[in-house]
Image (cartoon, rainbow, N blue to C red; front, top):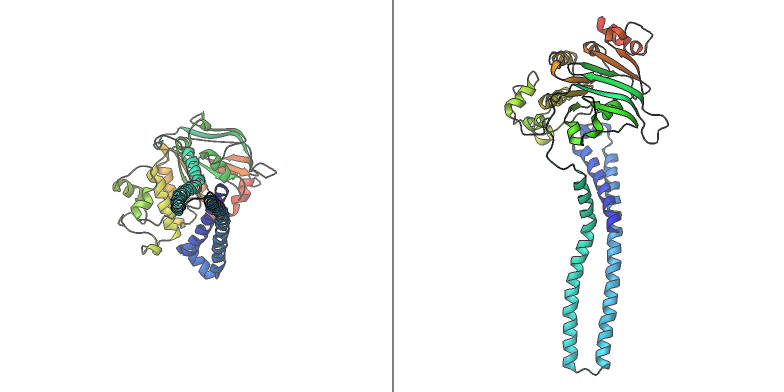
Length: 391
């Protein structure tokens, strides 16, 4: 009962904690207040807590039943012993000594029982913890790999469980050191799946992921991730001090000067590194675009050989976006840069663009090459944006 119950309790508690965070965090809390839907999230919290309590109640009921059974057996044994003493003609002193000895023995047994019960209760949790510890790769964390000559998806096919069609079919994408490439396509085309396959979050059904020409599956997880700096669309808004929020970009301890260098050219370049971020902690509230600039600063601080930027300027104004891509191009010679973008003008900076459509690479080439034929998938996707930018 304990082994089966505790994982369910943990699952319910985790869901309740997540829903609670949505109520008390500034961004979702503000949105829920405006929508008037906070009570619904509170209902989810209550439901999850009730689920955890129901599982705990079952475990406690089982424990009580076992303890009741043990108590009844003890009463029967103790009563039987007294009857045996009386029938055996024991004297009063002998009977009193027998009762005292029996009570002393029962107390000792009870203490052993409590200790054994604690072990039984803790054993499933300890087993789960040991499994988790064993799942963590042994050895020191790999240092960031700052020189990567090439990465590629080589005829990769991947399908999510339960789907009729694969998300990617025979996809081949390559990027070399010094290049900036882009992945474009409509939502659901397979761009994010390709990125997840590249970094190892997913495993291809067929084909290979190559890093410097070698199969990436031969690398341990931390060794593989050491090649990449990744900025996803749902970037982290870590409400720590400015120093700590940016310092998360590196796996080791970094100097204040390194953090200053990563913040160069941003709104936070001259701000105190001890400044607290996030109004919920009594700190400074910053905009979505400013949070995204800090996320980019973490990637710059990490300085891995491959930068993967998924919509890196989605929350940033046009002027700042232009400055960022200009800087990316200026500093691109020593790394591989892979960009996922839906903005046409940013694609002009790319050495090569892969158009992913229905899980396949429908086109590839430079921006000008892909815009030559107005009937192609790429031209139809970006014709309106291109016209607007020209005007």
